[in-house]
Length: 286
Image (tube, rainbow, N blue to C red; front, side):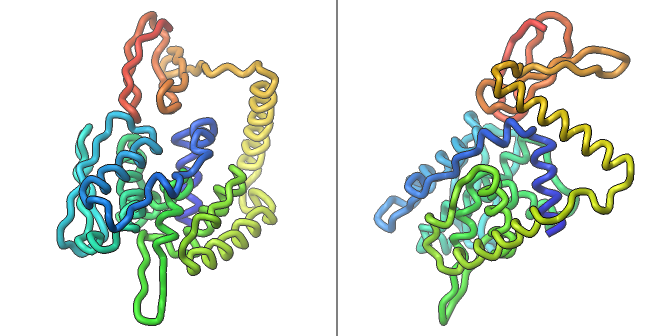
């Protein structure tokens, strides 16, 4: 749970609050539905395109194949724009879970574009599952958790209760109830336990273990956040921010018009910048 909480914090730090808010709508079940009568490869490509669209990666193209392998799936993180994804052969007959596997792999591509990672394979996989879930695609991974009298299945590196916890944290922020999309009874139970954990977080006093400097910084940043929210609500908020860089140089940051990721460039006349996430190229006067 410590790594899961650290992943949510890292996501906000890297994306900013405003960018996270653009993911207020989750992937719709109808958009990633996969019937047994659908063509295997065409259907997988359709679901992959929908998830690429959800993560706002307009120039990323996923090529999906199937082979025998130990893990559920794997993605080759190259420079792009093409990324090769391999799915386990068992998904040929378990097609309704292809969306869940691709949600995790496209999240890998998203984090690769963001240049956001954790040290260690397991920690990085937890970051990937947390990102997919908090940004609206990971409910598919929890719904793939099923048990019956003779078999069981779980996708992802988080426990079902941890998936439920991240979904509950997302639900508290965006007011979205993912439980209506679950087809698995076990997923619904795990989500209910996650909601209880998330509610317990709200009852804990902030910064109980922090020192004097940490509490002061928390109070200052919370005050600044309230002022920013109030200004934006009154129509006074500006998307541009100026900061001092090395040796006193002035930098300006603004949201990408395509994916809303913050772009930071020096103030030096006309500049050409490329968004590190969606690769949109912009020319602007600073």
